[in-house]
Length: 256
Ligand code: SAH
Figure 1 (cartoon, rainbow, N blue to C red):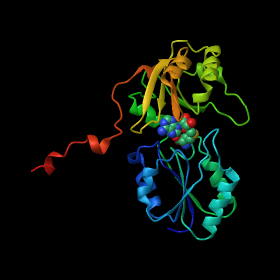
Figure 2: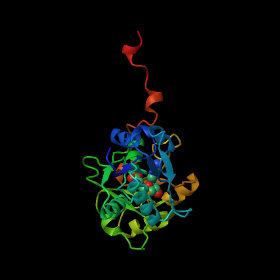
Figure 3: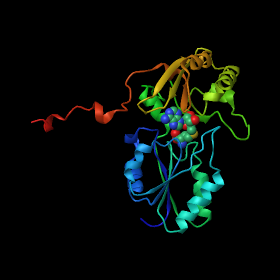
Figure 4: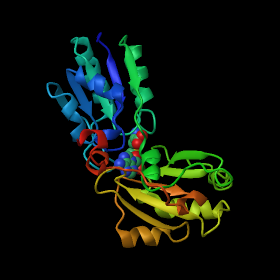
């Protein structure tokens, strides 16, 4: 692998949701710089790499973005193969493109590897189809958390007829609820709140738009969690499988 920085999505948590391309990049990494939301179990694919944690969870001890930039650059200039490993997809609320821009501006080649984003994984695991013919003609991914206090166009979202998947929303439930109600969404719109999506300790709480704050409080909903808001959030049919290896019976042809 030539010297470049790989910006790799580690998926939502279940190590089996890692892509083959991510595994290949990890296999060849000298340095792996990881975020907090990355499941350390994926590091089995890079046993010889140096692991550098650079996490920064909201409200917790954080690694400044500028420091992360400089560190990636320093390792790359030393000729190391650097994997910058991020939870979910690097470009969904992951600052992947900012990091890529910065590196390319400094003459470093960058390759991006998709990961499965938490919102998609969480919904599928709970049997929620984010789009559904005749019910939801699209899906909108939004963050409830902004650094500049700018506001989303909530009335447009409320009336879009698309399923809303809200990231970083646990601390903002009253704002999300009030903004959507004020924007014209009906009070009994189904809501699913999914914590630790795709991990063995995944939990889900179903409610309605008007009731979601109380439901989350009673459930003691904690971050990381995503909110799925829309008609489809009442569905729970074919659920995802987060224990694929354990749950799969021996293949018939291997038994005799
Ligand atoms: N790039 C990531 C998102 C990072 S923003 C992705 O594509 O998934 C961090 C937010 O993502 C969290 O606050 C939470 O809303 C969501 N998130 C990340 N991992 C999650 C998980 N396993 N379960 C539920 N939500 C998760």
